[in-house]
Image (cartoon, rainbow, N blue to C red; front, side):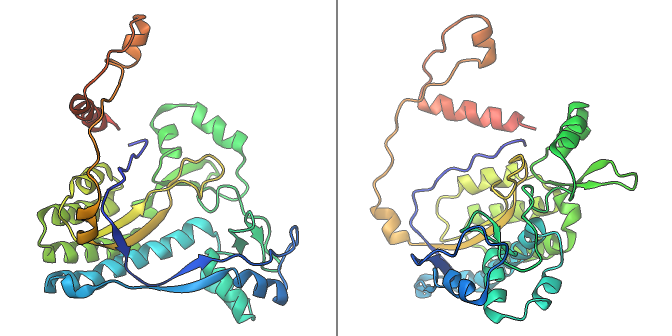
Length: 318
């Protein structure tokens, strides 16, 4: 699959987590500095507040309450993978060289030594500029080198541009693609196992099917079946978004998805209060490029037919 389209649900959801960090207005640190001083780190930290997120667990079934720790364990594995995708060195080694506790806290908030609220400005002494491709591409790789390899075409070029691959160098120094399920095998194996345990407890058939398919997808990088299963869920109270999804971390090309996760509990009462979306006509070209090639105007397509066509196109996507 070369692209992913996630449908926005109309369910009100409460994110389940111990706490979250929310940026707050505060004086911005001086721009352009290579690294932050102690006073500067204090100013940067002042822009965040710890917010405890809670929800009413009394409405959950015993099985749902047992599922929550399993889902959170799976989500934590995505946290570790994101560190590896964004920072080329060892997180532990980076933390060990930092003596200021506040700076260590700020590194944790930013998943690395670059300030995400300051255009990825380095704030740890001795750290250079953040690579545009994060740790998704090898250090020292130029766009000209990558483009030349991709220009050769074929399956190798597709894998180098793949949504779920890292670009590395083989022993001869040539660029090669490493699938995520190989590069992050151990954390993905642990996350998959937790999702399967949660699936065994799931009482909602749609949620159970999604968790089973997502657990398999983490081990194969074939995410489309689980994406479709996620969109098919209607009555689940628990939810988890997990895996490589957004491509913002790849500022070099926007090809590579980074791992993330959210564990959610739907507020079913408020969900029922939300107005139902109205069905509106959808206009799609009848045959895509073939219509334009014949010089014909696209005909209007009914909403139901459009959905069916989109599903057929999705099923054919590589």
